[in-house]
Image 1 (cartoon, rainbow, N blue to C red):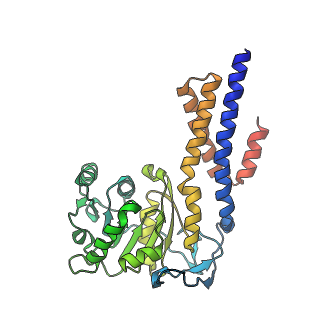
Image 2: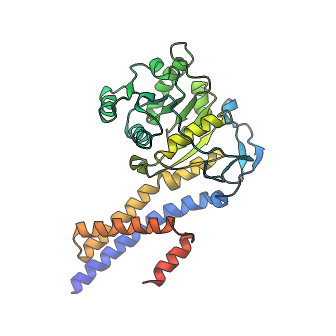
Image 3: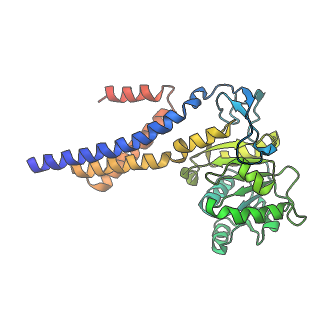
Length: 330
């Protein structure tokens, strides 16, 4: 018995340390994200941001400061001081540079939700196998062998490649979109889901003024993700609607008025799945150490997390109140 108690105490110590590590990271993210306290309120445009140091400022890089952010295109959302248009379904030509997991998830969401038809989607990747995999899973999706073929008359071009692979690709993309062979539609939008690449950097490498920088997270693969996105001032309402429709097909989406908020939210929604999986892993291990079969422990943890999230989503109470209420029921 004493050996069992010693083992249980050790497992509890390990659990506490791992949870504390995850909570410290979450607390740091929460402290940096206090600007989000105005969530759901009308955003107001403030003084424009000054020129950044160390690079040539572009028209696409200017954005007004905002006192908060809004849930893009929900019923009473606003863009600045104007009423935000709702997302709508329209068959634009959407071109994907990169045919990896994120591109596949976005294509799957748009097709299953009826936002796009297969014939309006085109993919290009240096790895032919990646394109073939998408074409086999989604019959009708086209493959472009060259970038000019991909971008020709495209309404939205999605940069779905890894940041370390972006320099050469952007040089080729810039040459393609500014040529007659690869000229995009008149008001085409460049959508980047690359981590850590700001709008001014994208503009300098492409000279495309209409840019949307977005940060999706891994649950988009089952259409339950969260996408935070930031458009430049040059992106007009019809293009905002098209981008909103694309993101609404893979989960919830939030449009921010200040690019800094996108960087902050990366610590919450972008890295959040890691924190949650770490907590889940710790809880499963704790259950096993107490004597539960691993399969049973994992099932209990998954359902507990799912039920708690659904409870929070369907409740009008704050997370703090829900936490206190759960404690009082024990």
